Picture 1 (cartoon, helix red, strand yellow):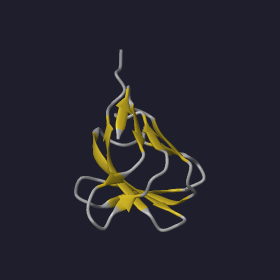
Picture 2: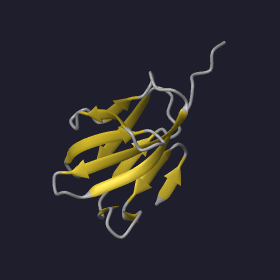
Picture 3: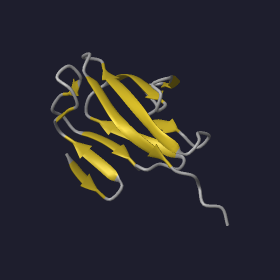
Picture 4: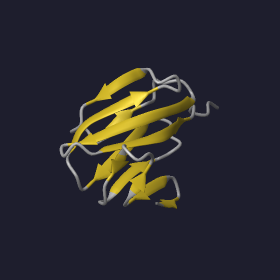
Length: 102
């Protein structure tokens, strides 16, 4: 995994022995996020789910959008689960921060 600025480039990442995202390019940015989290990959995405810190699913996102609108969510740490059309699963952590008001 390479981190450059506020983006992650993931080529092969294993979180547990059962859940993984196989080799291939995957990019999720910015993290931490204020408004929209963008997702880029060379694999077809079947589903995207967002969970709060308690593990409660709070959002299903249309896989074709390539971004998640998180502007309405509270400042917190969220978990994302992305499933490819091949059944591979990526799970990761996303930090949501509030927009600074002047």
